[in-house]
Amino acid sequence: MHNVTLIKGDGIGPEISDAVLKIIEAAGIKINWDVQTAGADVAEIEGDPLPKRVIESIRKNKTALKAPVTTPIGKGFRSVNVRLRKELDLYANLRPCKNIDGIKTPFENVNLVVVRENTEDVYAGVEEKIDDDTMHSIKIITRKASTRIVKYAFEYAKKYGRKTVWAVSKANICKLTDGLFLECARKVSEEYPEIEYKEILVDALCMQLVQNPSKFDVLVMPNLYGDIVSDLTAGLIGGLGVAQGANIGLDCAVFEPVHGSAPDIKGKNLANPSALLLCAVQMLKHLGENEGAKKIENAFYKTIKEGKVLTADLGGSATTTEFRDEIIKNL
Ligand code: NAI
Image 1: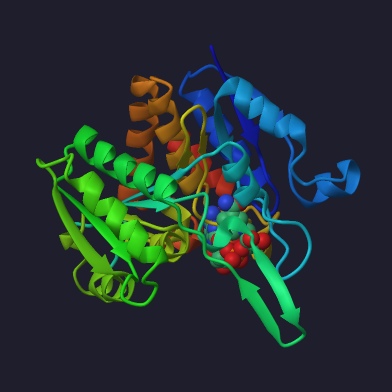
Image 2: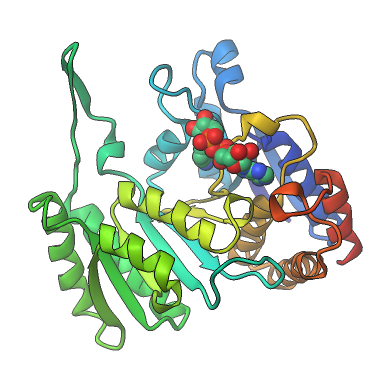
């Protein structure tokens, strides 16, 4: 049996986690869940929103499924998500983005992957107050992190038969930082002559993504661009409700949806559990549970394609639990 750390998060986190656990259970997959709490409520009791026990649990189990955790805006504690990625050195954030049959969008044949560097850039948390009217934030880009993320993107392309890796930057403006990122990308690309290497500026990429997204394949980029672009690409296939993600390091992997804790619909049984479910499918494949993963994936795609029982964000009127039960029926 697999041991997996489960962080149910807050906001809609617990509701979508429960739905996903029930679907996995109904598919007959046995997982020993090591449930860990994190976030604002935990901070009040334990003095830290991300206590050591959570990190230790993931280190021990090597795999985690994580629902969203709220981050206070503009003040309060540092993002639990960012800290988790940093402490476990989950350097690669992977966001596959493919059209789902049954979800209507203006775009067809979208099948791309955003590979986002996850540990540095302005997310390093190096900020300072100069005076009341001036704040500084320092963008950190290193050769080590840039080289390993681009390598990860090329290895991913090789493993999954992808044809092209695009390096995304703003090197025309951020000449030193993004310039170093591009220098590393060019060097790494030489080791993979069988995969085409291309470069694009992040602003041009955004325009082209909403004009002709099907031309893109694997996109690798520093942290901040990756954060923004991957939400954009989630929109191309139906929005945050169906966008999956994974944070991968050398030792551990944390699977988590792209969307946040959606406080506006918390506790209303309205949340769409699809993104967390697709993350769980990705996690099951990672654990070698390919048959069970496929079974859940097929039941999910069938439910979406039939379009009879869908949550509101997908154009339906079903509750989280009704949608969950329809997937279980289709298993
Ligand atoms: P959000 O993704 O929580 O919500 C944006 C909009 O999408 C809202 O209208 C929400 O109702 C809707 N939405 C999101 N997920 C949905 C789902 N599964 N089903 C149906 N509708 C859904 O983004 P927002 O409002 O910017 O962030 C809220 C909180 O979540 C913040 O504290 C933020 O820091 C945190 N957050 C946490 C993440 C994580 O734990 N990995 C990732 C992103 C944000």
